[in-house]
Image (cartoon, rainbow, N blue to C red; front, side, top):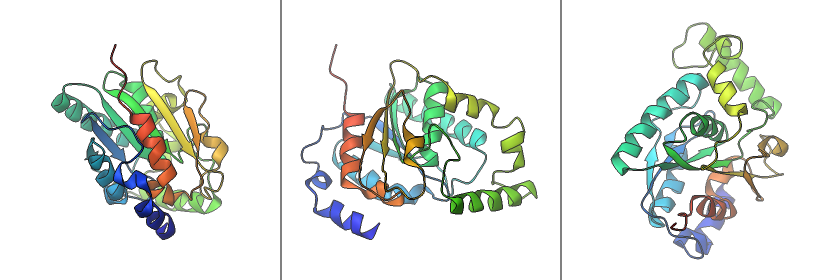
Length: 230
């Protein structure tokens, strides 16, 4: 990731050169598994520079029940859309992108465009075995009653039924979906990112480094670009 960040700082895209300018829309940034809002701070700075209004999701750590997380994101999206007087955009990394897809299916009236970065949209758990270990550990703690963590009920109970249906559902017409993926991801298997409803964009990046990848930033700018009038 440090090398990707250094490369980003040298790239013209960091200065907003060669990409479409934003129209002031709010962009809700949704962090990945085991990450929090600060993990997308660099992206927020860049989005502000090119003409958007980045907004935090309010997630200290994205380790909770996915169903409850999307409920929270829905309330945040309602707030931002109300302030803006129109639909907003979502950018989600890894698990955050999966949550973004579910939210757009649930509330297309609030969402104009979604960009996902290394998100397993086709198979949520098609990930590296090391990630599986963390999921099981956190799930065990949540099942024992530690608050704010996913638990066994997320897999076998009713709390995530709606979320799972939304992730698998056809994507709503009128909402743009861009899935950015990398064959050198190392965490999420790249084929799991190939949602048939998405504009699929391949970049050369590590999984974590996608949040500071110059090619990924170009894909984000294209996916969020204001629609032509009419």
